[in-house]
Length: 125
Image 1: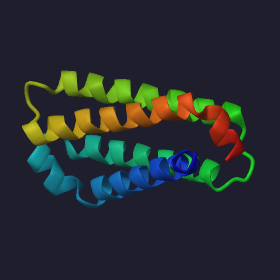
Image 2: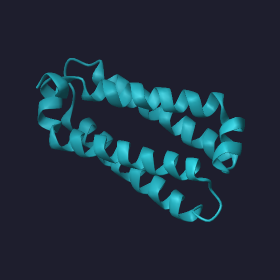
Image 3: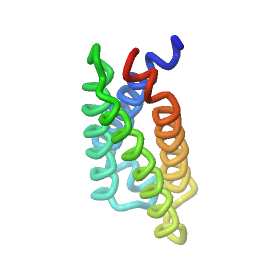
């Protein structure tokens, strides 16, 4: 139960870190990933948005289960979006670019699954 209480903070910190790095280093990462810098800025901005939402939920004493469920579903949708993006750029992105997209899909999809699985406990944590 102790780890579950901090799951939303993990979501928040990971999204904030990913978003900040993508926005701060969009040009060098663009060259490394062979992805347009505008895509990396968009992904970074979306990550910061997720950080705000999950951080807002994590800091509450009472967390509405509907908001936790919405975050979980949004994480799943973002994971699918990352996979779709990876498929779309598979011919042009470097291995680093593919790893970033598929790694984010795996991590965010896993968070979404865990948040869904433990939504009742997260509402009470």
